[in-house]
Image (cartoon, rainbow, N blue to C red; front, side):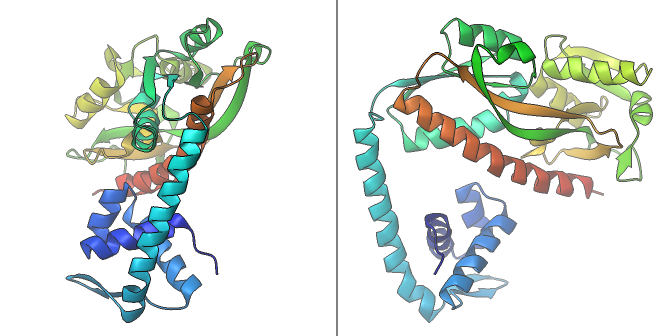
Length: 313
């Protein structure tokens, strides 16, 4: 029987709310992901756990039997986690994390929320800078970890750099306005002809998109230059223009519609860097694992969100 704690936690929350949508919101999961967890749990146990109806979900006899056992197992797991955390010194300490601005409004918000919920006594410090500045702070002992989007080969000697995921860049426009195209994708030349809102020159993302246009011998139609990520997204939602952004930022942004760019697609590698000559503390090591796990889950969620954003009519 293959049952894990995440499935049991999902089961308990659905039982508590009697509603898959509310349980998914509580767990910060997309509803399809929650439904898959419950379906996998039912398959492993060989029994249906919920009577599913339009008005909500109620426990079956098998579900009623499982609920007290699931709660006990989750309580035992939490007790073990706390004991191990105390042994590892995670009831005190600090983690100094650096990240680029585009990651701070997406992945990092998720990571810090999850980490703080699990280890509230750990002091957290965040530096929001471009990748090169973050590497300077890492080298100077100001940071323990840095989420970067650069692939500078000179970092190999001084840092341990772990690639996390490759993220696609997409074109976003206002969901309240007409679609910029009736196709699923558009060429970079088509994008260049649209009114664009572009980031500050200090953004790694700005350098990447500028390089892509130069390589294609294109000159984008810029209507606003120099904005920060949150402002860019707000301006796009208001219909001021379009922008090229990482797919991750679409999460929790129903006011945006996205279109993929035709081959060659624009992507960026997100990596986690730490000093090569400094042993990580227990708290830093747990943060590293939290980031790695969150990146995979967040990328999957971003993919689901992008599909929804493409389907907005």
